[in-house]
Image (tube, rainbow, N blue to C red; front, side, top):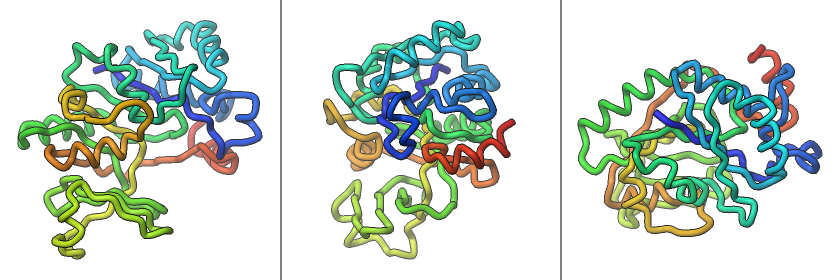
Length: 250
């Protein structure tokens, strides 16, 4: 399996560091987030990785070259000309995955102990048991300002901002007909396994988020989840969380 690390973001939550550097090069105990996630993927046999770049892209390219990809074959997907967001970034890198049945995508600003082998096995089972299966989203039960919404069968049906109460639904009728007791809220971990059918099902172009893409696709296709609430997950896109991560990721 190949993988993609999303490292093109502006990293506004990580200022002032990102005033002069890309967030993927922030360090935890002397190792950059990019290096840590590349080594994390290596632990599960994934050594072919595409990294998308935009904000201070030259610094990421130089780090990859100077460290020989930290032992992995790294391909750069250069988005220097435009910010494409997560979904647009994956679509822009489509040629890299043209011969892949499925691949893994993860954010550069997370650190986790999620057992990828178990997630891949779960994805295989879900794919076998469902027609038009597009992918598996890593989630936990942690408290969050935004939730993905699934039905009792584990199928993605919507999204909710718990602060503003904004809702988005894969099917507009769902918000009217779905019993609130049957909705399963989960916190997205920024890790997903995407199948090749994603590129034929997606109808968006240019700049868009993966969440918007999933909700559009979920109207006619199936997207499931893998719950890894028993593992560590840290969003290290904030300075205070970088400090916390240093105690958990030596």
